Image 1 (cartoon, rainbow, N blue to C red):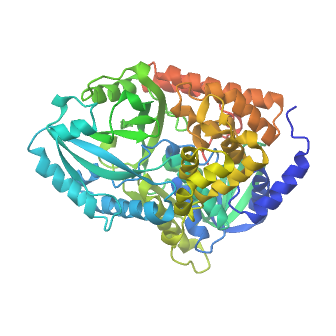
Image 2 (cartoon, rainbow, N blue to C red):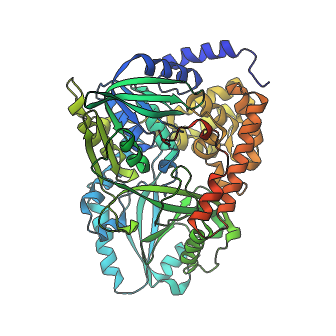
Image 3 (cartoon, one colour):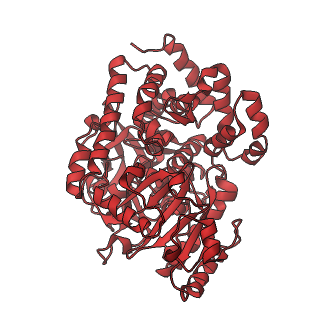
Length: 590
């Protein structure tokens, strides 16, 4: 029935390995985590496994606190896997005079690129086309400020370009679309992988990290929150987790969680839908990314491996929070704006991948989501419960530190200051040396140096763990069927070390197969499902259900992208099966 013959011995060995390697989030670690959640008293329980939640768990653990993190679905399953993949200051926020946010984000960008996560955060260049001659001094002043206001930067400064120079760099652009341009640099990251690495780093420093673990209620003692009641989404079992303070890091679900705790809280969160699509790299001939002004905001064209990411939209969303759906109208909006500057226009047929995410914006007086604040806010909602919302991906570490600072009021022992500005993520140590050794590593393990560098930019020095698995079973160093940019060893590693429980976890977040291939993972689902079945001991029925659910989910997303309204798209998308949904309670989030 697909169960590994010596599963018991394998599980015992994995348990020993997990004890020796705390950042390992495999099946044995899941069981150990459940036992600890049920039996121990924690200083902090963090609810929500996005980048802010994992960041808060890391911040608390590195202050010497006893921490647990629970997430109803998967790490980064919401907003933190559906961003623009940029680690940036936000050039457009300068125009809104939000200098504090930009300065803070630029400092975080530099810190992460150079010290905390150089294996995950990479430089990326952008072309800012100028459409009127008078724009040059105005935009130059803004970009100059952007280059310098965060302090010392390892990125190159801006470069002024004539129209001819810009067209040589980006021949995809119409000559009539610009009179000149400015090239500047920012940074990007695979958001899902980065969030998962933050979570693994939290575990490395002692945090109990468990996914598929839903908060179904809050525990109260007199007038304070004293912990949470959780449900194992996979088995249905429940237990209580006791803590001095609970930190609500659930993003767009913040309001629902506050209501579940018996309070309305001090701020409201509004969901803004952002849609992106991917096209093959050869569809837009350019040596650089681009940023284009729109009537509402800006449009990015972002280099992404063999693709371009084009986005984003910014519209209010009041429907299903777990599965925001892109519509044909969303895609038409993006196509209209990008095609206004391209020599060879794109069509719907050129789109290979699509994803939609929800930004958790702090609601204010303005009803336009594009004008709502990207600042974050922290509130001690009631004794024993802290909530944090708003903000932007790049400033996750600052947000996390602020949340734990607020939580300290409910912790009876002294709480040390935050130190995460000096704590590299797992995989960072030794990364630069390994980049220089890519050819030797490739020769030793039978891999092309380009493949080694690709792996290093996803795993950093954790690459040794993958290569060791490949040495034991050389077949793991073969490409994933129909998705040759990835190796089978990455599937095995995702299950054994990265907490992947379902097929969707692997195809959508541990890898980005679901958006990087025109088949959106369907052509790989059978092979990856079979591999995961062996590793996780699935029955044939479980394996078939995982594959069928994934295929139906992709089809539902494709169908939603053929209708024009959010209501129609939502109806089509939520009709698709979800391996976790049947056991998720009405509360609806981690």
